[in-house]
Length: 341
Image 1: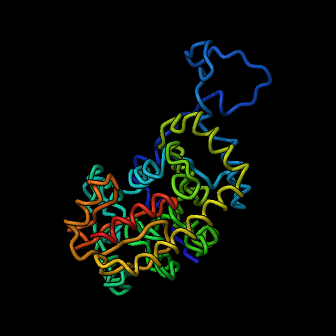
Image 2 (image 1 turned 180 degrees about the vertical axis):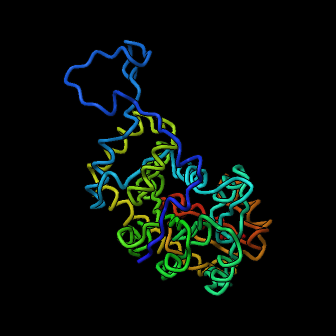
């Protein structure tokens, strides 16, 4: 168990910050007359959303077997990543650590906040070299380590996450955007042991609600209170909150969709074996593949000509593109084109 004191990691000005509190959302009323927030009295969506997202947090707490006080909801995981950096990283002084390759937005928000971005170069199997990790965290003033598992864009999961929690005296953010596709255990079960752990999840992938832009942070009550202090008052709109609440009532639909995506992933993997322009398909626990091509320029150009949109990772990952799993019609269109290259 890690016994880190979170307050020693927080920026001094954040510790002194007083949160914006909506009087309406922090009190209970029976039949209120709303004359407090300069809203219009007309319209279907004329009232500000619940700034504390009570109903949504209660539903998530029941789903995850946690306390609502351990949950923060963001305008996508991107907002939560930004807030975490702002809370813990002093501009021009502290650094973040991330894997390379990994999700670019960790470095993007750190750079905006004028924090140094340190990268752990992954090995040929896109795994962290533990010795490199230990050396890096000893030598640099790192406040936050972003660990994406399954990792984007490589698709593989990180084993032994407790090792990084036990050997780092800062905040470890485990980004589980793709956890539903992996069959791996979530790091949520480690929250009680490690006060320096934050787990990020999203409704944009397995839940199929990317348009709502809703991400969730799970952590200690202490860290969640800090996030609630720094976030904007009405950061998740009422429409998005309602969409997510409705989705949470039909969890079986999500499980069915995940099962179908995994089945399509298996079908694609089998089809890739007979395609000559593919040099290597990397193992994946996510809803996408990282694929190395023999002639990436030709293949990528032909896909664009057929309006098949993929994510080109070359030259950062030489010769590679990331292709996510679609429905059968979309996947067949992709396979038919690749077979003819």
